[in-house]
Image (tube, rainbow over all chains, first blue to last red; front, side):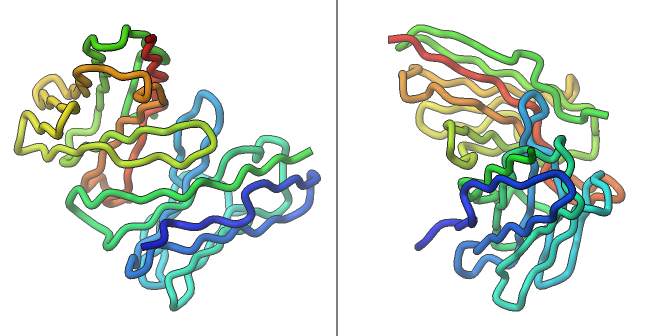
Length: 115
Length: 115
């Protein structure tokens, strides 16, 4: 079974531009979550989608948005990029959402550099 | 407001000895706890989990202990191997109000196992 696939792996953008990152979950997984990892800050939760609906949202500005398609694939978009948005963006999928220790399965991330 | 804390940024142990990674949490609504391992340039991979109704869970060389009264959990790796060298993240989930059941991560502990 293929794992979580994130594209692209690396991205360099300029301040003020916008960017779209893509995530294909494991087949059969309906929940997709996005995290931002920066040095010293661990993994910060961005949002979670389940069956095309946003279920949870973290404390990020409105410049960060996402969506999920009917095939469970997900995209996240960052508009008006700032230098501080440089980070590793991780996508994770799971069978379901809600209570229980259903583990998240992570992709290898997209490394975004804003110059 | 950091609800999951890993106070040791790094830990170094000798091959064959025990590695103990610690994690504290503040939110009493957390009811599932998970540990993830992350190698550079890869996404985190799930290691082991524990429900709040248990105080210990074991899987091979990995054991997680939960002390609910102290809001503390620890991951024991015995015996430690050089391939265990990675960043370890503690994570927790529960019905915590506005962000139900999202997985909240600590900042991670870099484990180095010396041959």
